[in-house]
Image 1 (cartoon, rainbow, N blue to C red):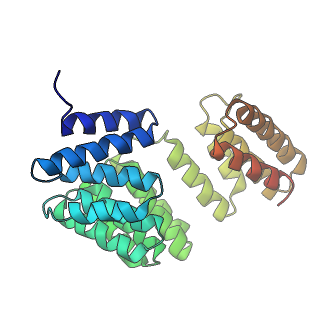
Image 2 (image 1 turned 180 degrees about the vertical axis):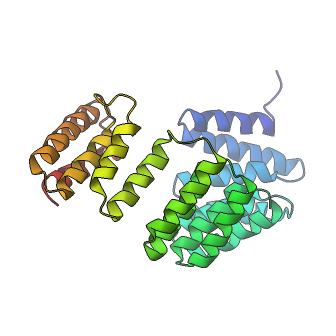
Length: 274
């Protein structure tokens, strides 16, 4: 068996990332870059891979160095997209959107890039630009519900218009058979709450649950919030208690899961009226 080549090191790196071995991945990618450089120059894919590994470890300066080298290939959108990720982590949203836009120019059929320009434009409060790119994303992929929901959320954020948001969801349902989608149901529950239609929101939650006697945690918390808004304190407290029991069990089973920990903190705050 001969010595490992660049492709071997890159493949090992991807496997290590999949298994959570980030340090080992960075070492394999470093060896791949070194071997490719000896053979005439590191590939964009390998340089971007090492940049991502460095970014995950928090070494953003070294990641930028790799990406600047990779950016010399004017035909690949990978370096620009990854540069945008680095700038997002640094809170440099204007530089991030410039790079995502550059990537989109190279890959104008990508709904992923279009919607991410929109999402970044929202962070810059450039809502008209966000709307334009959301519409482009939908035109590129009219069968992806999350694109419609991004546009609907924009109308809620920009002007608090549940009417416009519901119109977007209506367009969604005309293009996609997604009447049972939890994401759509949750969004419509939110619009019901904004409109003060608490009973309608509760009815919607009842139709959402496949088993009304065993709803998911999100539904339990939504019901607790709705009963609190309706000033039905005993019912609200009962649902908060159910949520607390589920979360305490999950925290014990997965003590390192920060998302569960945050959810538990939110539940305690809401149940106490915070």
